Length: 117
Length: 110
Image 1 (cartoon, rainbow over the protein chains, first blue to last red):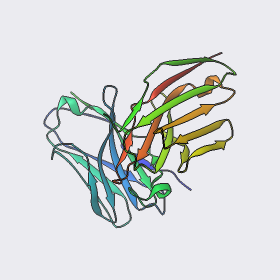
Image 2 (cartoon, helix red, strand yellow):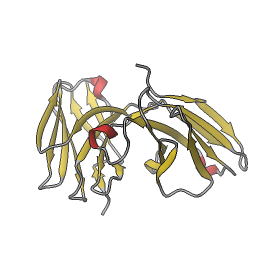
Image 3 (cartoon, chains in turn green, blue):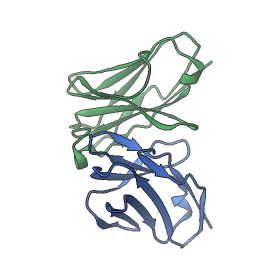
Image 4 (tube, rainbow over the protein chains, first blue to last red):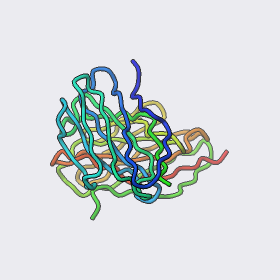
């Protein structure tokens, strides 16, 4: 079974621009979560999508948004990029998502490394 | 108090020794616990899940859960240099939130 895929793998943008990242979950997984990882802050939860609905949201500004399509693929958008948005953005999929115990085992994609200049 | 706390390390052990990684948590309602391994420059990889008190073994890895004391541990027996990585503890709280610790960096010295 294919793993979680993310595109693109690397991005370089300048301040003020916007960016869209894409994630394809493992086949059969209905939940997709997005995380930001930086050396200083560790793994920070952005949001979770399940059946095309945002089910949970972390403590990030409204510049960060996402959506999920009917085939469970998800996109994340960051508008008006800031230098502090430079990070590794990770997507993880699970069978049923949060609150589902063993069905919330998260499987991570390789990540998109975003650099904002 | 943070939901999940881990010693950031680095933890250094000689090859062949047992590495012991620990994680404490604050929400007594937490039911599901996960250990992830993350190599430098790579994404986290799930290595163990544990849901009930006691030990769970998988090859050289043993996860230990003690809900009364609110800690979960990961033991790596016969540590190999390839085990050198950052190990992240994660848990699902009673309110169905998933939290990750900041990770413990393990170095296995040949």
